[in-house]
Image (cartoon, rainbow, N blue to C red):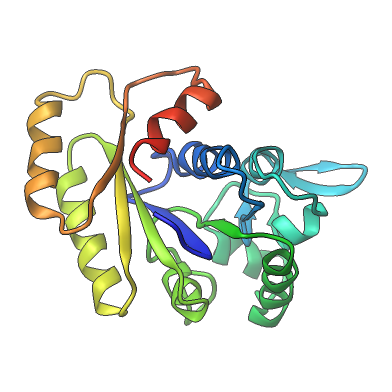
Length: 224
């Protein structure tokens, strides 16, 4: 799987998007590609002397193989851990696609591949009218869907895949990420996704409270 840019989305929040996005960065970098990453808009950030910093964006910054400023990786960071559009409204900030475009373009010019991570799920709002899905469509990105393997994930995954197709975007693949160690009928659920999803499965990640970044990269590399 090769592409100029990938958009990593998930079936919900907390399903392992950053885990997969960082794994993709490392897997492609291991192939000798110059890899950049973005978390365009992030909430749940902490104040630092250099400004607000988001853990997901910092993880992406550490996983990518090109050098970049934090503001290029994460142009909009908000402190409260709430929906990004609500955090933006509370801080009287409008998410400007022009700002995101400029950061994206700077990274694109220095890289062979950009991995862009969304927030929450596919249709998480960015403002009163637009969502992360609109941003992915704006940049015409191929999509990688992280399926958090827990009760309800089949419906969420299939609805997300359907919405991606309706926007004319390509679902390059999906990753089954085991986030519930007690999820009954895990293998049967993964088999159901294999039979219903048109896109290939890029990897199956076992439950791991303390994940090994290199192991995740290796698990994903086989499916790329």
